[in-house]
Length: 283
Image (cartoon, rainbow, N blue to C red; front, side, top):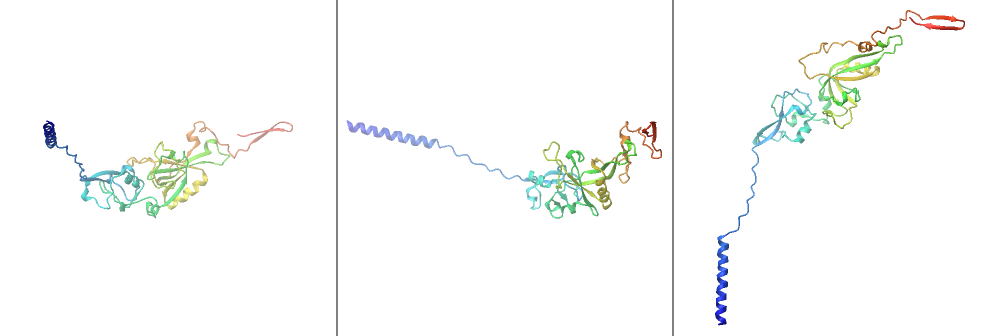
């Protein structure tokens, strides 16, 4: 009897094992998900000229544009469009002229700090002249290298015989000159609202005669800069080569416009109303 029970138990275990094997074989484990590696893009973005750029110009962000080109056409001298590349091109000088859509290559630009950069920025026969400015005379840090400016001298005339309306005068010393540097950096100036310190010096591109005029003007009074419009289709009423008229204090203030300077040809009159007492009158 015991042997019969053991026999049936073994048969039952065998049937259970066979069934388990059959179930596992009919339900294979799920296949592992295959990792898909994306194919590299067939094109890549490169930096091109967004507009006509003249040789010797300092690059700005608006001069740069992006273009997709086949990856097979990208060579070692192609500038890829990356944030780092755009930052490095900001303030760089182009060695040659560019048309719209031309590729900007590393060999075509010079960067601030490169040997001979300042000399290369200057046009033939021109000089670099630096003038001191502050937050007011430097137009609150809004001047950028490449801007065209006028240099204005404001001075006080040390003439006691002159009327108050003719003791302060302003005149344009230089007209339509190019800014090539702000402080010691030949890069774009600080944007409005920036926490950077205001500019202390501005370097201008001048000829020899202009350099001598500014050297004298720095000893006469206060110099300030006036930024000119980038639109050259509307020339000034006074040509840039002509000297603008001097502006006096009486031209600005109506209160000073009626002052009459005491004439040195009319000596003062002294009146003696009593013994040992006198008063002097000017006419």
